[in-house]
Length: 150
Image (cartoon, rainbow, N blue to C red):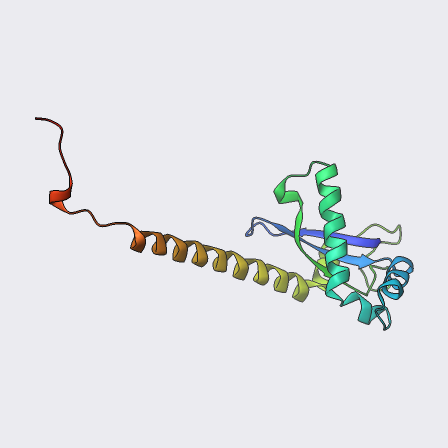
């Protein structure tokens, strides 16, 4: 399912994101079985594929008992594999994290922007919900309170 991956964490955010290079030998048969047409680059953009891979990552995270900070909250499915030719792998096939992150920096930034926007929307919705609760509270008048001290 996954050929290569880069998990990226930014110290200014409380979550990590991932760049996933899907395994073409798994993706294309999956797409045919789902009736999805197109080449690898087209299929990788399919939201259903992204969801399937994200769910599998979540399953693995639970199985490995990863903390919330260790689980990617967004993923980008890429088509350009990490390689010596594009400068993201060493000659011994080790990932050059900084170069790989640089290659996908615009996608990483976009994922973090999505997370920030989503968090802001959740805060606003929570604030609106709390305001609605306050407006529906009954008003108490001075004379409606009975004291039992006599």
